[in-house]
Image 1 (cartoon, one colour):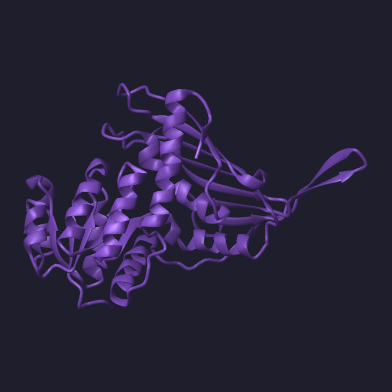
Image 2 (image 1 turned 30 degrees about the vertical axis):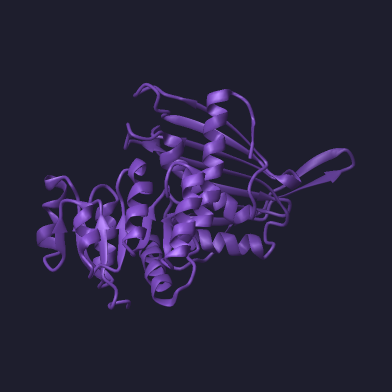
Length: 329
């Protein structure tokens, strides 16, 4: 346990409360901050030994705080990260790091300059099921990658500050880039908004990689049921990571293949095989990884460079949505 570190969580809302719980259970929660009194109030009883602040300035002025966790609205991430780094703090910021890849690079260079850890909350990179999927792909169990697609859909929580692409798709972009191992060469995006003018509720992003690999990402908060699914198709098999499923149904390898008999393509179906993975809470794994990186001086799996690549893909998809044309990265 990294109990010599003292961590402050800024933002105690929808996701911040989960971060509070994890860092408290890890024995490092020293303070929490939220400008909304009603949002902050319930945690006084839960975390009586942690200081409660109403302004981030109070966090940065507390010299006992070693690291800051940022779980505020996405539009504030970049500025708060900069303030934290300039105050000499290690930073774990929820995705996205900011809304501009160029700003992400500036923040990364600043973190390197002041020798502080900068980690971005791309949670699914720390999901034991995704890590098992990544290992299966690396071990050649699906053969050569051909196509990937992901669905991240549910009904609510409907945002008004950021659209579904920026709210949902970072998870899927980070997983797809982690599996393919490089940036796409082109991106194509389409979107629609039905609840708030100018805020896309539904987007589809199509990515084109060198070597013929393609991927698409469907995200929506106007969907009748929860569907969090990543499908990986190779020439020797397929894997489905269904995060909405439980138990053995969450990660299944299908050794399907397509072959030819003369001039007729044949679909060779095979029984699905559940893949084993550790029974660990992804957020706990992620939080512990941050503490370990701070303590040991290691670079996080989701460092600022990984976050910058994700942002470049998201920005290209957004540009395509606006222009109606493919965008070259």
